[in-house]
Length: 201
Image (cartoon, rainbow, N blue to C red; front, side):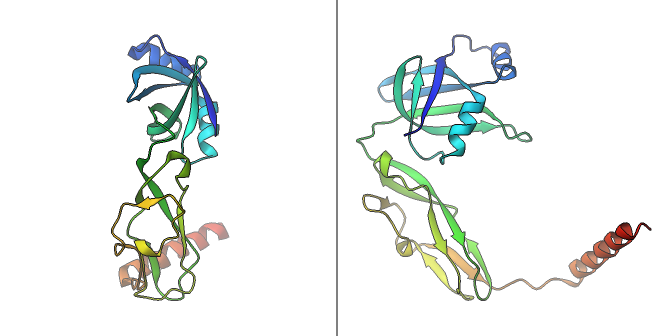
């Protein structure tokens, strides 16, 4: 299981937080049922690298000044433009107790006819932290207009319980919307401008 190093954060004022970020640190908090809420700081590059190798709904170890916690990311705040992590909330968990979390729903392939649309982007599950799937992936190759994928159609690993109705529609294949005359004209105008620009006119 991935381990992330952190330090206790002694200063929590606005100015100190801004200084932390300028120096490459991410301010955060770790809390849980049997642990007092604790302000921490983590190296921004290390946190980014760790979370790049796993989804945020998976557990990992957070080592705060030598004390190890099993945690999950409860919330990440990212910069709206740069995308870097501004703040991280970690929730301490018990690896031997089931938890309620959400798992991303992904699609691969292309329908034979129509467009496959995700009705839900996440599916709620209950399981032990170590059994949380990274995602549920559905291959829609060969699907046709009107085809649907229900919750009961998912391949659910042993030990994982879906918390949605078996008949709930997760993916639907819809007809391709016909382009309006206005949108066709706009595309033709854009293509004409692009051709002129490439010709150097």
